[in-house]
Image 1: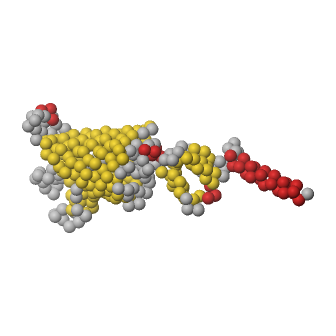
Image 2: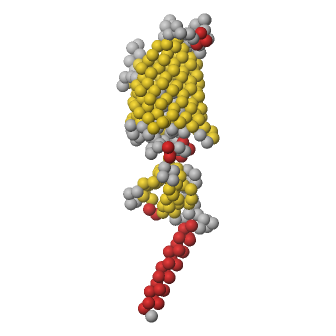
Image 3: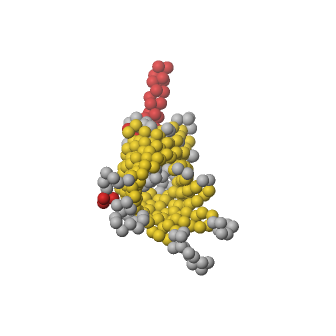
Length: 321
C-alpha cells in the first residue's frame, strides 16, 4: 500500500511538471509579447547571469534567446529577469567572427552611417580637436567639437536603415568662436551639412558620402551694416574598413574637393587620401595610427613629379558609458 502511494505521488508530480511546461510552450493563447522576434537584447538575470542574443521564440512565461557567438539557445523565464536592454541587432550579423563586436563610427575623419547605441557617450580626439557624441537613440545623436578645451561647434546626426546592411546617415553642424571685438560675441567661421550611405556591418563596411561647407571670407572689408560673405566648398568622400583580427582593423578614406581653391589650370584642386591601422584595445578604448597624402593641384595631370604631402595621423577614442 505504501509503495502504491509513492507511485501516486510521482505520477502527480510528473503531471504537474509536464502540464506547466505545456502551458509555457502553448503560443495559441492570447498574451502580450514583451519582445520583438528577430531583435537583439542584453538580458540580466536576478541570479547574476547575463545573456546577449536574438529573440527567436516567446511564450507567456519564457522566451528563447539565440547567442550567435556560441550558436546556443537559452530558454529564460521572464520572472527571473532583472534588466532588459535592446541592442543594435541589425549590425551584429558577423558576431561569430570575433569574440566581441564593438567598433566605432569613425574610419579616420570620415564617419559611417551605422546606427548608434542609445545612451552611449564617446569622445574621439583627432589632432587637437576632440569630437564628443551623445546618442539620443539608435537613430539620432548630438555632436560637439572641442578645440583646445574650448567648445567650438555643435551638430545633430541621424542614421536610418534602408534595408538589411544598408544605412543612410546625415548631419548638420555649425562652428562658433569668440571674437576680440566685443565681450561675449561669437563669430561663425564655418557651417555645413553632409549625407552618407553605408553598406556592411561593424566588422566590414563601405561608405560613400558628400557634403558642403560654408567658409567665412575673413579678408573682406566690412562695416557694422555689412555681414561677412561665405564661400561654399563641396566635397565627396568614400571610406572602407575591414576588421581582420579581434583587436585590429584597417581603414582607408578619401576626400575630394573639386572647388577648394580657384585654379584655372585644373578642375580638381585638393585631394586627401588616408590609410590607418586601428588598434581596438577593448570595448572602451581605441587607437588609430595612420597617414594622409595631400595632393594640391590638378588630378587629371598626375605624374612622377607631382607633389604629394604626407600628413601623419593619430586619434584616440574613449567610450564613456
